[in-house]
Length: 364
Length: 275
Image (cartoon, rainbow over all chains, first blue to last red; front, side, top):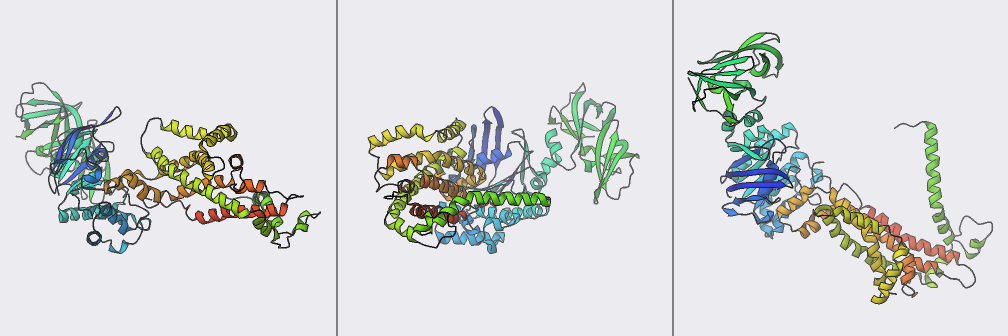
């Protein structure tokens, strides 16, 4: 087991910059998720950690040791690939043993490790089959077993669940979580699926266009996004983001977007905004409430555009002075398109961004 | 697709004609080889042979057919082994290793394989003459390897290119060097491609006539095609013996293809990645 430290990783392919100044740390035993839209460079970063790709500059330290010059197999890592990458000409048992054989591990240890992994992953009865005779979920387990038997210092997962159907994905997610608890080994997990990231990660690294946008716990990422990208990327349905102008008045702020106006009972921590500045206002759909539940509260009145009943909850799309807001209400909330409704949001739940960054404020 | 009855009849007739047309010469010399000497020359020709094995006996005994077969096995066998030993790493490298001018190399290989043989016959003869390779099996194997390499490399490069890259990366993480990745993971997966290349190479070397005639003038070293062409009777053309020898020359190829057909099952790599 070991911690992982990345410092100033850059990667360029030809003239294209894929990664820019990536620095991050995974503590020993931590589950770190690299999350971002496709093409954000998260897989490239994982491959650089694995040694399958060489960074243009910066360095990778595993357990305090710089591994930049080491080939993948000397970094003591194990990787689970998106498409499993099981050797089709070998049985499950031989697949599991392959990495250990290459390291000249004594065969009694190999047998013991295979037995251990097979029990843990419940694949003992599949050991003599070949990959083509396995289902997707079973292949996934074998792929994890192949990483497991090596007892590596670092586990790397490259979108391991993306080829499974939704139900299997949910159950494998739970298994991976259990596995991490049981092994206590450092895991780096790449995904574009925010549910996987939120449920698995102890630390989430949100990436976009080759840069880290935010590092934090799932809670922090969700509750306090540092910038509009993170705010809009995390959460389904996505956060309502309105572009407008913000002006600070005595003990309150005024947010204006064309004809839409909102008075906010908040005071920015950094004062001194005499003139209105461009800002983005963010409200999560579930933070819009059908009834005022606390004081102070911000009221927004608009017309119902569309109602989507999802069973457990209802999505209400509101048109407010040419702007659109999505609200997520309990399914018991009854409303018809065309109705005029007032929705409420606690000022604590409002996000404000200026110059691409979160604007800290206190509530009056 | 549904076809009208007329189309189906037309298709059937077409297939029958195509098969009969291409099989007829083969069938005819098989039949001839089983006839008695008198029946071979009979006019009008007799269709059904009397099952006489005399031609086989005389082809084997009087014309040293087995010696030719032996020479052919040596030359075609070593050509196949050498050609593949070079083509496998070359094909793998061309499929996977990023290098400048790769398309020029592949294009060049294709161009070389299209040169008319007569163009290189002179230089090859001179080269072998200087090296002392005339009338030796290795002297014939060398040009065969050179001539079969382009095709073998093309087949294998295409095959390696289609294998999932993730498998190689998994092998690297598991601790394989490039060579270990090649022979532990890639070659087992590329067996269909390797068999295809091997059979084509073997057939080429087995059937090749022109260079064999040019390089091997010593009857003791000659390969089957040359041996058959130089079959000589004292007064007449030994049609029966020729037919018998031709059957014997073709049989190994048919057996080879049938045996290795099992190896040429694509889809061996199914299950490696999602699929």
